[in-house]
Image 1 (tube, rainbow, N blue to C red):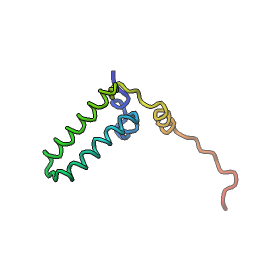
Image 2: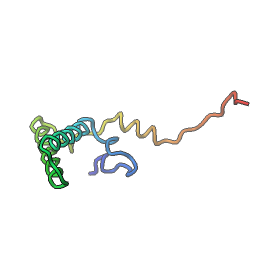
Image 3: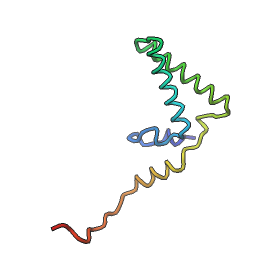
Image 4: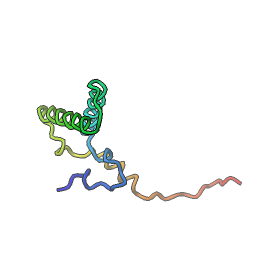
Length: 100
């Protein structure tokens, strides 16, 4: 079964289809990486990539310890409603008092 994030249109941001908790967890891992790159004076893609992967694993471990499995979180209904509303074509009404 595909998640809403996996079946999203490719021209839409992934964040439009992820639950807030998942977005915040990813953001937290990215901020940890940024902090540690500066703090540990990391250079080069391999070192930074390894740091980022370690941070993602640490955040995921915290979530699991708290009983949260990101892959099983449902999408936000409000987000899906917004997306559905935005994707529908809108009918335009003619202006009653056009500017002359």
